[in-house]
Image (cartoon, rainbow over all chains, first blue to last red; front, side):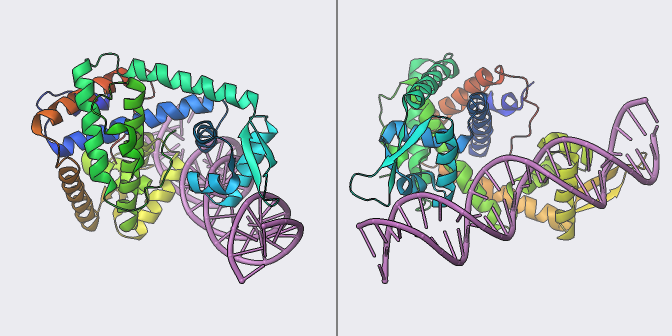
Length: 163
Length: 163
DNA sequence: TATTGTTATACTCTATAACTATA
DNA sequence: TATAGTTATAGAGTATAACAATA
């Protein structure tokens, strides 16, 4: 019924092009679902990325966020403006540099980020529910190998790909 | 050195949330590379999707393309206008419905689509080069299982996820 | 009356450039 | 002189609405 089943279910599908197709199709689907979850909470993907970044790396200067999210400083201004207006983050003074402001999560922001993280965990359990442990181990390792193969392609790998 | 390596390389990484993170990170990376390839040829992703759709399913009415690509009919008009202006596709009359036009690949369009397909195959070989056959088989099967798990989530699965 | 495609218009997301205040 | 962030402006991509021709 679903396009993901057509080729991807076949046991003997060791054709690499098919495997890549399946991976790409699945990726698109996962991205879609993630997007939906983020939208449900009233965020845009880039905003969620910003929040996740703050969760993982702690308070940051806008300059750092600009680099981490790979968007312009101007864009960060807008994103932080919106998130601040709704009480998810707040700007504070930089301890030593009076030009800079430090963006951090508010209590409300921390709460929502934790909730989203929890959802993500539950989603992962669901997604891999039918996958036997040993298969999951192989799967993970292959992901690692592919990741390595793909990293060599070009140097634009400083990205923040989570969320 | 690369973020994909951090967690994803670990052999014992059977934590499902970690595996999902790796998968998402890898997806982002693959999408990036694909985007680059498409851009090199002077197309946008949505245009490439349209061309691929024509390759797989043959000539189509704009209405069908609108549904397949999940964009508005108005948007399809613009896409086809641009692709037609550059000689990749052409509009022809519908045999029975004089309102409709049928979009098909030109010879030039067929050639470029085949070339892109070939590139995709070579890329797949490269990506999976270091993955042993049996592991690839397991990997493919897990992709299928996940795909099935993920398809049940919601009914918006009529999409055309290739390219 | 419903449907195919188009003309006209507007919105969302992101970028570049010029500017202010610090460093 | 260089850097952090902002104001002002512009572009790309996509959507909604109203309309024409045809079914």
